[in-house]
Length: 461
Image: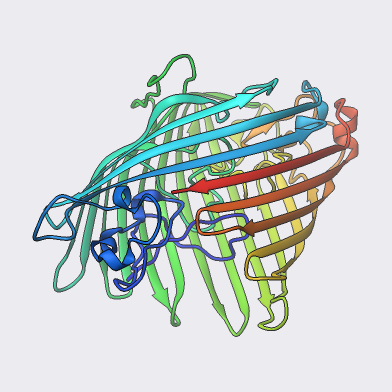
């Protein structure tokens, strides 16, 4: 059985998120960040209906089949962010604001193999001065899909059609985008086949484009497409080797050194696993194609390696290494700027100071678990540009004005401290603080050192 896992800020190893986790029929189900993965059929046993609201978590629709039921649920996230210099103060003033995300869903299971899932999202900001595309989405349809899952003698077939989300691995390049206020959805057709140690995945998708002018105004179209073929293989026990090819197509793309229709061929390979206290996740991506009249020649790579002691506070010493190409020569016939596709805001920090383009990144870290409920992580990050001719980028892939062709390779260094606490199965909290010491190139462009503090509470039911 392949298990899905969400790559949260503290995650060390995750697989593709597209599968319902196996749960013991003798225990209450566990909550999942992807709510459609939850299986509440265990509450057919009255002895497990021990919490307030269980009558709505499992609404039986058949007297003879416990797997035919309706389940309702809620997600609520409140995050206060204090930033004295978003984008290092280049065009952005000090700001303290609130991000709120409310999600309501209904999950229908029927006819043995079928699932219909709908989720409505209301994402809002309070006092945020600069509203980005992933900040606001008042009352809109986030998910609405029909799924089919059936096991055969040689394997399991799964399919989904409709508005859905998916993520791969540590979510470096294909993610749920859980860090920002608005998660990423796709209008897609998805299918996969699992047999033995192998898994084959294919999907055709149109990424959802968000608008906050009025409710239910989000759209997708053939002008922006993301299609993928992926293969996974479990090797050397539970370790995973995977590779995929994607076609990323976007009309009217704009880069510093290229404009026009973007047709990007993406080739990705990854190896991840753990053994004897060591965990690792290594991924590389090559990109070819064209933007307008210019050829694409770009690449990106990332590695997380760590060792965990199974004693005391379970300390983990980690090292993260990342690199991505930039555009090496302005005005030639080649675009070298890496496109991070659909990155997760959690991957570097929540502060948004670091985008996954034209960079070299080294980040040692130490993670401790003083108790079963508390996780503490401290890290130092050091950043350089891959090429001086291209800009410094902030999340998700935004060039800082005035940085291309100026200064040197050194971008800056940051310190990060994050604490996550689990109050109970429904309620969690987190605090993250980041201090960024900007390099000369940012100061020359008019920026300065920056501080970020985020305080987050999540409720799930």
